[in-house]
Length: 511
Image (cartoon, rainbow, N blue to C red):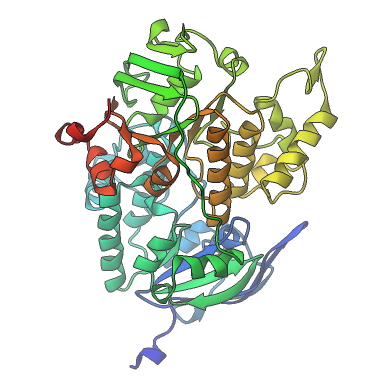
């Protein structure tokens, strides 16, 4: 049989899905062949997530035809999709917080399983992909990155014929990314098709055989990414190249926030204890924190933000004053701002409007007067953020849960930036955000830095940290490396430090 006679693993024709206020997918065609690694590229709100949910049976299209291995199918629900051989890892995870990793995975697999056997299979599959997982750990104790690992392993245990991956490398070291790519290529060589959604253009060019580009719910082109440049892919996706960030050298000012001997035991059995954390954060600098998810970043941010009240008073110092025992609200009043890694449920209340969500950080005489909420002021503030950060939302009254992940991230970052904080703590500022929006967020962070703000940015995007940070530190197993000027660092060095091996390179570090 010639290659032209091999039926497509997945073929979509004229798929359309309309919601009351928007056409999410407009006559979309997509063909994925057996063994093909096919990228879906598009800015936030382009319709990628809706299309993937249609393929996986979460959403039903209004019109159009779907064929699976040459046969027309109507996928009623995710269970039917999994039975066909379709596995998916969502951008927003579908895990039960009160169940263990193994219990969550068992819910996504057909049939009954002895838990001990399933735990062994989970450990074997996770090790094969270089993803550390503890099967008996409860999901509510996991970081966002660790939750993504659970979703990836759950999908792979179903032995899929088509695997849909949404931003899968954001939880991996550079070395582990290459290991994952080897595994994905092996899967493809055995006939498994892969739909790969990523905003990392270099990954798409390195890994994928074909790329379908979406804009405004429509397909605007299909190309071979291996024949494209980052700039040409960006033009296909957003109509232009992202602006070049200007990160000029400037002398950092006085120390604003310090940690000295910050140590904390586990808050729960699966938490990462912090051991002798120490750093100085200065006015007019961005201090980048690198590390694989689950190495203490979550615990560090909780301590710095005031959520973990077990911190010794003198372990944290703000403007020369011990603040270990102070509350979140007190720290906010002193000019500290926070962007958590969890957008929904922590960074924003899902069912409240964008205007109402302003109250999470903007509680002052402009928004609350004599105990009464000033709704007009909140709507005005929210509208300003929507316009300035080009957030795709149906106005300030739109529910936070109605926004795509990238647009909600832009809104939350914008909400904190507009407070003009003196100190800003940011976790995963551009996770799942398209290249245009990521460039805008990074430019806003650099503008804050240039205005004298002290920023601590926790990110698993090493390229991002190298682009915006003045100095870098690495977290591994609850410990912190020496600080290193970004100009003296390299991807290979930071990658090794992410495994806890900085003592071998500490001679190059700045104190």
